[in-house]
Structure formats: C-alpha cells, structure tokens
Image 1 (cartoon, rainbow, N blue to C red):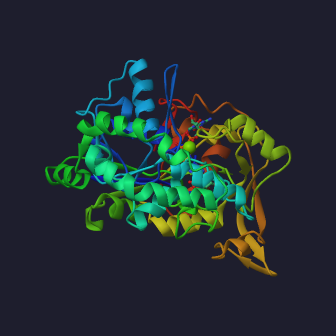
Image 2 (cartoon, rainbow, N blue to C red):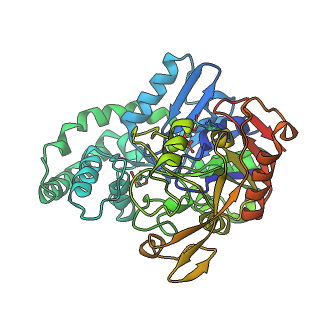
Length: 421
Ligand code: GDP
Ligand code: IMO
Ligand code: MG
C-alpha cells in the first residue's frame, strides 16, 4: 500500500502528529520534498520531538528514508540524529537511508537566502534555511549531491568550479564572500559521516511496494505553499501536493492507494502572503494562545484565522484526497460562535473558489457562516460519539466542504488524542 500525506493549508497542520500515529502500520516512512524549513512535532508521553528532516515515523519500527527531492542541510540532519541519540533513539544506517542524489544545502545557499530576502521589496518571509537557493542549484544542475559530498575528490572538484561563482554572487547581493569557503572542511566531514546512509530511495520504495510492503510519504509545508499551485510568490520552492510525491520519489501514479489531507480546524500562516480570514484582533490571539501557534522552525508567531472553505476546496482539487485528518479541534473549544468562511466577495461577485492570483486573493472579503461552538473539554474524548453535538456537526461540515470523509479527528497534541471514525 502506498499512502501520501500532505498538508492542506499553509503548513503546520499537525502532519508530524498524524504521521506518528499512522506509522506503526507502515514499513517505510519517507520525506519527499522541502528541507529543514519544515518543523514537524511529535509528542509521546512527556517527550517532545521537533523534527526538521527526519521523517516523523522515527519513534516506530518503520524504516526511514529521505528522498532525492529533499534538500538536506547535513549539519542540521546530524544534529537531529544526535538529539535523538541523546534521547535514547539510535538512527543507524539500518534505520535511515538517504538518496545518493539528494541536494545538499550549502552555507552559501543560506547566506544568499538571507541576503536576497533583505533586498526584496515584497518580502516572502522565508525561513532563511537556504531552501530556495538549493532548489535553484538543483534545477540549474549545479547542485552538490550527497554522493558527491561523500566523495572527497568529487566534492573538491565541484567546489573548485563553483566557489568563485558563488563568491561573486554573494558580493553582488552585498554580502561577505568568506562564507563560501568557511564551512567547506566541516562539510567534507559531514559527507564522510553520512556516507553509510546512502541508498537508492526510488528502488527501495518500489521494491517494498512490489513485495506487498506499506509505504507512507510524508509531505512538508502545505498545498497553498506549492511552488506552482500555491499563493505565488509567497510560496516555498518545492511541489508540496500529492502528485509531487510521485515525481520526487520515482513512484508511478498508478501505485497510489491513499491520499490523506491534514487539515487544521482553523487556519494559520507563517511568513507573508494573503490570508483572507486572518484575525488580527481578539479571535486571532485566542487561537494563537490556545493552539500554541508559534513556528516550530523559526519561533515566529503564526498568523491565525477562521477556517477558509474556498482554500480547502482548492487543496482538495490539487490533491484528490481519499480521506482527511482534521487536527486541533480542541483549540476551538470555548469560541462561540465559531465562524467558517464559505465564500469570498471579489469585485461585487460571490465566489466559492480562490482566484488564481495572490494579488486577487488579497482583495477577497470573506463571507462567514456562524456555527454553534461548545464549552466542554473535548481533549479527553476517545470516540466520535463522546464529542458534543456542536463539535460533531463541525467535523461533518468540514467533510461536506472538502467532499471527502474526515476519518481522523485530532483533539490534542499527544499520540493518544486521536479519534478514528
Ligand atoms: P506540522 O508542521 O504540520 O507537522 O505541524 P507543527 O508540528 O509545526 O505544528 C502543529 C502543532 O500543533 C504542534 O505543536 C503539535 O504538537 C500541535 N498539535 C498537533 N495536533 C494537535 C491537536 O489536535 N490539538 C492541539 N492542541 N495541538 C496539536
Ligand atoms: P511544515 O512542514 C509553515 C513558509 C515560510 C515562508 C515560505 C517560504 O512545518 O508545515 P522557505 O524557507 O520555504 O523558502 O519559505 O514558506 N514555510 C512554512 N510555513 N510550515 C512550514 O513547514 C513551512 N516551510 C516553509 O514561512 O512563508
Ligand atoms: Mg511545522
């Protein structure tokens, strides 16, 4: 069975938690895109794991893979492996495999990301992790692949050619070119340490599927941060939607059995770009406080707003979900009434689907339906029938908007706070 799981909004929907819950049914969990711009939280017992590159199946017996479409900062990855080792979890090459063709995020990518963002008139609000510039080098075929990082001669040959070019680029952006050569010795060391983890991810996955195994592909970011279909230009640099998993992993589309969309019961966004239902005042503050809406990667406060049905409809089209995991329902407790944006008004017309351009989306006025809230603590509910009627109605409403069954409802950050319908 091949399952793809993606975020349906602007990231931080709670993908890490849902992956952790699902992983025990899978033989392999694989990240297919993005890099350490992602921050996926898994909470088990009293322990909190914030994962940026390792798949969120790390606490189960599943094999973990990082596919060739991911951009890897090797220092961050080794830091994550060490953090887990300190917590008693060993990430050996038997546990983790990284594709030989995975692009490496170099120090100059991070520097260029920061410098370019400072200069932009319209800021994107990137995570400053070098993601965009690492993907530029992949597309222009000037990347350093993991296999090359792990091969001293290949690495120095590439650096001899690239370093002067990258130094000039950094000078052009107004930065200090010293950064290009500074970290190179460290990087050669990282390459040697990561060498035993190198594998052919597409081959491993297809072999696993071929022999009846279960594979779970873990998306990072969310549908509206997609490089092509998102709210350009306020997006990330990879394909975040379900089709991207096939492309990045080298698995054919006819192999896909399930596509799970992770949807937050309201909406959040970090960084710039339109968010029609954003609540700057009281409601936004309550959602941020109750939901702990601060970035896992950068610590930035997340912008919060009411559930946005037009954006949800688009995410459902882009991904063709077979089921939904609805998260953070508990955060809505005590808000009465709850508002759902069902349509927008744009240029005196009502529309139920987002306009294609971000500049138009930014001009949309949300039209809200008010629904009844609830005051009971739902974080202890174990079954759907334990939820108050108003909460059950809210879940059903989400399913109707997305036109797909909500099969999982998450009612708290912990592994056991999950209702399966
Ligand atoms: P991801 O990037 O999609 O994996 O999401 P993040 O981990 O960045 O952010 C989700 C946050 O919400 C994390 O702090 C989770 O621990 C937390 N979380 C996940 N599901 C729930 C839930 O159902 N209720 C509450 N209150 N918190 C949740
Ligand atoms: P997870 O996987 C939320 C946002 C950034 C910025 C834009 C581009 O945890 O859901 P980038 O550094 O990727 O070039 O930044 O994308 N962004 C995220 N927002 N969750 C994420 O990941 C994100 N990864 C990137 O804030 O607006
Ligand atoms: Mg996150």
